[in-house]
Amino acid sequence: MDWILAMTYLWLKAGHIIFVIFWMAGLFMLPRYFVYHQESEAGSAEEARWIDREAKLRKIILNPALIVVWVLGLALAHSIGTFTQGWFHLKLAAVLGLTFYHMWLMRYAKALASGERRLTGKQLRLLNEVPGLAAAVIVIMVVVKPF
Image 1 (cartoon, helix red, strand yellow):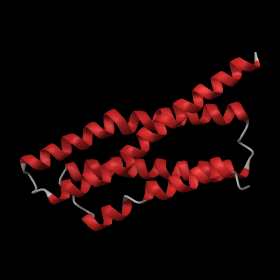
Image 2 (cartoon, helix red, strand yellow):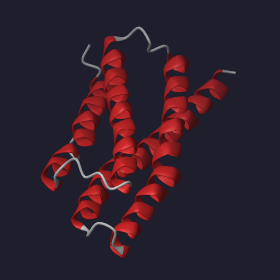
Image 3 (cartoon, rainbow, N blue to C red):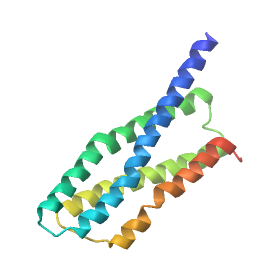
Image 4 (spheres, rainbow, N blue to C red):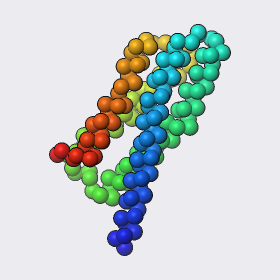
């Protein structure tokens, strides 16, 4: 019976890592798309292509990956009882932060598609660093478990 639980854990872990990679790739790509979108002429065919690309990235990669990451991540945490460990609390806070960042990106994409260009390309390039910083915190917490 123990080997079944061990194999289930390994499959959950593998799936979680795979979908984290998909999610992170999307979180890095979408703000870059926004930069190119904002640099295109308003109302142009190029802008329409960027709106379409952004929508596909959100619907095909980002949103499904977010859901699977959360489901598998919570299943993993439950299976090994990490909810009471300090490192997990910081990891969870970082994942919540990334989730709020994800939601902000979704709202900004819709605003950008409707013609609102609230941020500069430089600001969007800086925002593109958020997932990398969060990923560093998350990986350190999971691998090193400092507390």
